[in-house]
Image (cartoon, rainbow, N blue to C red):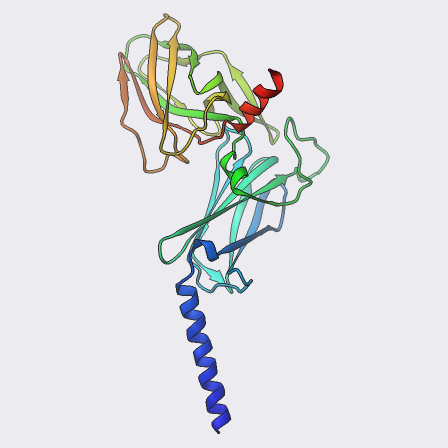
Amino acid sequence: MTSLRQIGCALIFALLLTACRQQRLSSSDIRLDISANDLLVGQSQISVSVRDKSGNAIENPGAIVLRGDMDHAGMAPVFAESNEAVNGVFSLPFEWTMAGDWILEASLTLDSGEVHTESFRYEIHYPDGDRELPNMDHNGGESHRMDDAERSAMTGESSAVYMQIENSGASAVVIAAAKSAAAHQVEFHRSVVDDDIARMEAVKTLFIPAGERLALRPGGLHIMLRQLKTDLKPGSSIDLHLELDTGEMIQLSIPILNMLMDEDPAPTAVGDLVFSKLWARPASAAGAQDHEAMTD
């Protein structure tokens, strides 16, 4: 009887100790392991395992949000989220919308409110397996955990600027060119998908008819910043100069945001044009600096 009582007390103590240990967990104690059941364009199931440093599953770890971005600016991100884990494992439906290299960011919000984030690389293929991926690097189809240096340069040496432009005037407006001190090249691009193949198409000008709006957004029209001269960090901003076909110059301040969600910078009115929903993706200039060193 005494032995059973001692065993029972030991079990209760172990459970209480485990509960206390999990309550004290911080971001530095967490490790995320992630796997996808299918690395093909289309629907997939993503499993995210939450463990402590000893490899023990963490029960009721909090809420998880997945964000998937193709590894170049201009494409629309894909999101998935869940607050239900079984034995420390989240299972989330996720759609790989296009073939190519992806960055999958997993953000776990602990009960304390602290957020733990890890990023992984994936290469997604076409279901038939016989089409080449245009102008994209390959990593053998395996997932790869990204370190802090890789995460700081997630979008490489390019970024994209988005906005909405409303023309309240009686005449159409043509934006003929753009430039920024943050990048060596600033171009107008459109994201195009032909038969599941994603590509970028250059656009000569931006045309806003009288009384209409033009939306620049992920997965559509955007302003590409190439060969960055400086890091674009969330919370900072850059200047963007737009040149109309009349020669008039318009200067805008573009905030750097991870994503335009509830944050919506105040509109900027210049003559008949109203610019709203302005933002640009974070990116690192490291790749551009390496490129310059190689060409000097």
